[in-house]
Length: 226
Ligand code: PRT
Ligand code: ZN
Image (cartoon, rainbow, N blue to C red):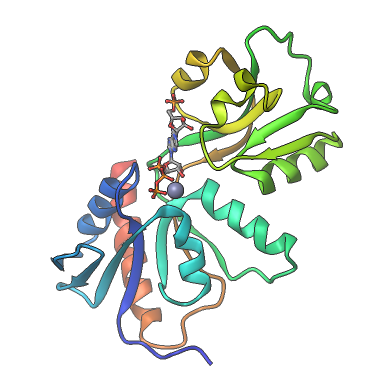
């Protein structure tokens, strides 16, 4: 049985692209915090809603483990970890509650500039480097293309030049990083942005009302921004 709690705990990125916009959105929704000295935990003052500052990759797992109730994370990260759970035969425990309108990017297939791109079939038998193996695998399956997935933890865009891979599947926003590595995006497999992630199962205590209140306020802020 899940622990009963009377405060809501939201995980956001500690430092990175989503940290400031996530804080700003929550502050616009009326939240304020007393900052702790280590700045990993911020105690909510205006409402019983606390913040936990973490690496973005840890957010889905923190929700899955019930350590945090909600989180602000890229859809790319949330879907990747959902795919990982599903491949492992685990049931879904977290899902996207709201799209938040910032942190926009695409998860794209990119190939060397010199390729004459004909379509996904051209990837058959090729090695594709990525930090998003679950989404790439699902997409390749859907395209009925068999390719080798080279899983890297970073610096994916230099893999083709190093001879580690023929193509890549990575996040793109302006496209400058790809261009600097003599690569070109040829198709997008996901449109991503920051999302509010939460559990699949509703809260069974006062956190349900807190989450409802927060969602109503956030929806109000997001409507005005549109
Ligand atoms: O430390 P922590 O693990 O928390 O941070 P992180 O380094 O994993 O994450 P961070 O802050 O880089 O990204 C957090 C989230 O921002 C991602 O999960 C995406 O949802 C979103 N986002 C939006 C991006 C980009 N835009 C983006 N451009 N994440 C990464 N990039 C990379 C891109 O892959 C390229 O290497 O930034 C580089 C510049 O992109 P271009 O296309 O503008 O050159
Ligand atoms: Zn990360």
